Length: 484
Image 1 (cartoon, rainbow, N blue to C red):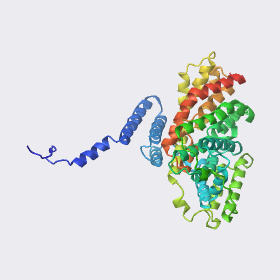
Image 2: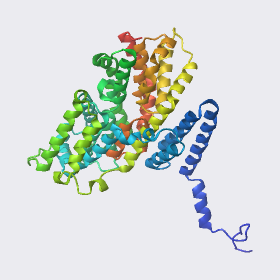
Image 3: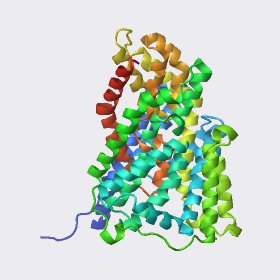
């Protein structure tokens, strides 16, 4: 019998290693995900083409494609953002200033300045000094460390209005604390600590009126469009017990469940008191951080956006005479991929808003929601679902931007008070489905070096818990307060 390999139709044999390579390519999980995304994108393009205008259909198609690419991480996040810029410009989906609006938005520059400030904190070793002092306050157990970080991060939300600013301030310190306690890179303990800081200062803060961007957009638009002034204490009483305090407790329990780890080593958990005096660079950086925090806290007075305050601080830190960063800081310490990612997300939201897709989605869904004035719970649930879907095709700030102008019409359709209709938005934008919806979480991923899969897992888990447990409890609290 012949031992020769079978020939191809051309008479040339196909090497075994080429067959294996071809087989691994076709059956690679990433390739299959990409095929699924392309099929989904084409399907959306065909379906929306029958019911929407050309501009809306293109916006819907591009939105589905980008969200799917970001969610599955088939390609690097920055690659999808760059592709978005190219497609949106070539197809004239929106003006240039709309497509590239992310690059001159405050969140973009706040992320950039946060990276620079983080680099300065590491360069001066201020993070290690603060971490050593902080470690003695959190106890010697892993569970007490997670609980202490979440509590501290939530308390910071009461005094600092910008979620991204809080994250860029606290996460570098937590990273140094993890090093000090012996939680190496990639360990569950280190991941849990960064998640506790990032999510702890972001998610429960939706219950504190000035602490997150969607809250402020809702309050401002409610007053400008409907003459309804939302007071700090009314908002706090309505939302903080469940969406703030209870969700913070849930966050601690979830991190301890998903990312358990050992307690810190005894010699590393000891409260080490620094006896060395502050160095000159440390003192100068503390002044820069203190001034930045002061301007962030008083932005309602001077009306300078947190992004520009951060940029001013970053410029000083980058100046060679300051001695606060390395000479090649921009080349070695700044993650430009994350900056492109954030710019793409913000630009996509702007394109969707300009196309009118969000308003069309709300009006279409409202027509099929079967609102009834004698079913208030159904109406609230339907409004929350609609707001959640709006967030999925835009982002969290897109909820108040799209839903608030339609609030009076929705109040007439449902028979609910205008204030109740507006507050349903909080149930939606406080329950994050995926990281791409929230630029602060993208910042946390960049500064804290968190993989997309880790943050996505936490978001999805909390999203389900939010629907099954948190939202019903919040509605019960509303009923106790007489809002229902």
